[in-house]
Image 1: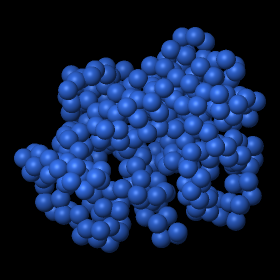
Image 2: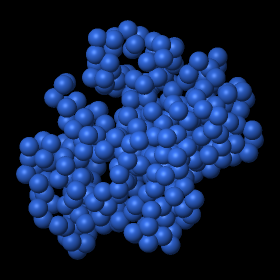
Image 3: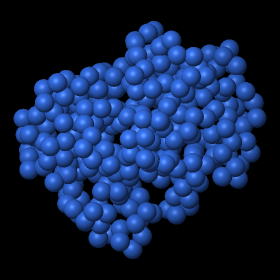
Length: 337
C-alpha cells in the first residue's frame, strides 16, 4: 500500500496521476479539501476518459503531518511513503511555520516509517537544500555541494536542509530512503500557487526581467523519477532533478511567447530591485497583505546557479522533457480548464 503526503500540491497531484496507472490503491492525506478539485482537474487533463475511475483508487484522509497521533493512524497498513508535503515561502514571517511543516513534519514521517517498519520512503527535498559554496557560477552544482548557512540563506532553504537531516538521521537508524532534489518545477496546476505564479504574472503583462539564472524541471519528470527510485533497488542516496539550466530572461520569453504576450524587455538593476522590495514590504504592512517581493526573492533574482542532472540520468537512464515543452503543457492545461 502506498501513502502520499502533499497530494494536493503541484508535485503531489502529478505523482498521484502517475501512481494510479498501476491500478493499485493509494492513501493521500490533505488539509484543504477544496484543493482536491485541482487534483481532479489534473487527472482529467492527463488521463482523459479513465480519469474518474483512476481517481477513485485514491483514499483521501484529512490529516496534518504535525499531528502525530492522527498521522500514525493514517499511515498504518502501508509499506511505501512518498513525502511531498511542504510549506514554500520566502517571507520572513513564515519561517517558523516552514520549520514546523518541513522539518518537524518530516521528523514525524521518518519516526513513523521506522516504528511502523515501512519498506521505503521517498522524500521530496529541493535544490534549496543543496549547497553551492565556493562553486563558480559557470560550474554545475552536484549532489555533493556543501550547504552552509549565511546571512543570505532563505528560511525555506534552512527548513528543507533541516528536513533532509531528519531523513539522513532515519537512514542511520535503518530506514530505507531516497531523496530527490527538484529545481523550480513547472507543470499543470493552479497559477495562483508555487512556481506557477510566474505564468499568471506574465499573462497579465510583465515588462521587467532580472539577470539571474536557475534550474527548471517538468513535474512529469520529477514524479517519474520518484517512482523509478522507489521501485528500483536504490537506497540511501539523494538525486538532483534538473531539466535545464536557464536564465530568467529565457524562461520569461518562453512563457510570454507561449501565451502570445509581449516579452519582458527591461532588465532590472540591483538598485531598482532593492527599492522595489522595500516598497513592497511597506505597502504590505499598510494593507495587511503579503509582500509581492521579499528581500530573499529579490536577492535570488540576481543569483546565477547551475545544477547537474548527470547522476540521475546515468542511474535511471532518464531523458528529461525540454523546458519549452513543460511551459507549453502548463499553458495548455490552463486552456483545458
